[in-house]
Structures are given as C-alpha cells and as structure tokens.
Image (cartoon, rainbow, N blue to C red):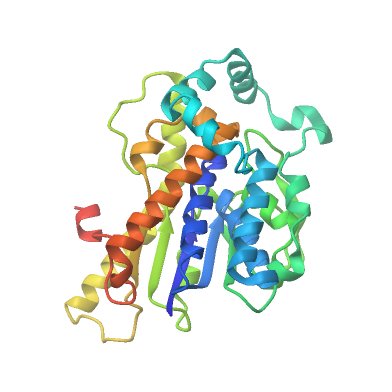
Length: 343
C-alpha cells in the first residue's frame, strides 16, 4: 500500500478536472490517502470523497463524488455521456461561445459594477443547498483521511485552516466564497469563539500544503493543479486579463510553499541541516495546462454539462498518465523538478 497526501486546488467549475483525477486514483487499490488539504472546489471534492469513503470505502467515495458533480450540473448517465462527447463542440469552442454570450456578458458586468451586498440576503450561493447535504458526521470522522479546509479571514487577511470537527457547512461555503459574487460567510470560529468573516481560501492557500507536513503523515504530496501556471497567450481583453490576474493570485500561495520546500530540500541535500530535523517532502503534480489554457473565466463560473464532462475525462486521463509514468516513484522521489520550476 502506498500512502500519499492530496492537495486539491480551487477553481470553480474547473474542479470537475479534480473529480476525474480522484475517481481514477480511487480505482487503484495500491494507493491510500492519508490526508487531504482542499480549497474551494477542492474543499468540496475533499469533503465528498471523505464522507463517501467513510460510508463505503472506495466505491462510496466515487459514488459521492459523482453525486456532488451531478448536483452541480454534470450528466453522468452512461446512456447520454457517449453521444454528448461525440456530438458537442470542442472545449475551446464551447468556452468561447459561453464567454461571448449576452447572458454571460451581462453577468460579468454586473459582478464588476455591483457589490453582492446590494442584494441583501436574497443573493445566496447556489452551492449552499449541496453543501448542507454533506454528511458531517462522516466528513469529520476520525477514520479515513485527515481533512483540512482552507479559508481566508477577511479582516486579518490570514489563512485559516479548519480541521476535524471544526468543519461544518459554513466552513466549506467560506472556502468557496468569491467576494465579487457573494457576501462574506460569517460564523463563530470554533478556535476563538469570535464571529469572523471569511472569503475564498484561494487567496491565501490554494491549497495550503503545510498541514500535510506533519511527522505522522507520509512524505508524498500530490497536488491536483487546475489553475494554469503558464499561459503563452498575452491576455488583451478585460475578461482574459481578469482571469489571468485571478490565476496568478490563486497560484501565488502554492508557489510560495513550493519555493519553501525547494529551499529545505537544498539544505538537506547540502547537509546544512541534519537529516530528520525537517521533512524532505516529495512533491508530485497532476495537471493539464493545455486544456486549461483553452478554457476561461466563463467556464469556471458557469458549470455546463459539456465542459464538466470534458474536464472529468481530462482528469481521468491525466491521473492515468501519472500512474503509468510515476507510480513507482511514490515514496521514493519527487516527480516535480522544483529547481527547474524556480530557475
């Protein structure tokens, strides 16, 4: 059995890519998840996986992930998915059509010009209904992988990582709360008892890696990355500029932690610090930047069955490639060249 930790990024509806990755990994009986850190869509995927796992192992986790994304808008009926994939346009064409649609343009303009507080309590996050249906006795159970959910404290600007029985519907809603769309999620922080306001965790930890460095956890951290680190095309219109700004800001916290890992690994390799004093983290990543570069902020904001199906399929394929190429490296060496990444 190979024990690993998972780090699941947020990125709106693009989290369906992670859905595909997780379903493929769950099909491999050799791999076990010791801990999961998740933000936004990654938090929802993590909570769905754990509650399903506690209920019925791997099969339960896959079933619960399918349920989650069906609620969001995916079509999982095997009678429909094959012809939908064969007859619908490519992801890039679909993304452009959605981006230039009058409905999305009106939505985008409204979110730029108006505060979500203008609408009062009537502007509710549509994910709330789904999040409230999670089985929190299972989400917070001691069995199954440890769970860490990231949110951003609005007033302090600091990351807050919720664990174990701290996790409740408000925590997952906070982790997925984009401030341009929804009012901050306010609740009594279980740690302090003080009422705090929280926004999307992606601003401070997308996701946070440091909870996965605990000494009792395995060395391997597998990051499922859904915000492209690199874009060849220069964004020139307002939507693509805003999208790239969001991608850069949502990747910045992850890159900071990866840079810190790279620094520690150099110290260990140079015998500057004694072996065992700091954890020699083994970093792995599953991503599909080619696909993500064809998508845009519209496909991230508005889930459509076509895009969700394409993302799940791409996630499964990316995980399959990773297992084929790097499964034997797990527990032995990193498969991300951090020195090259930061050169």
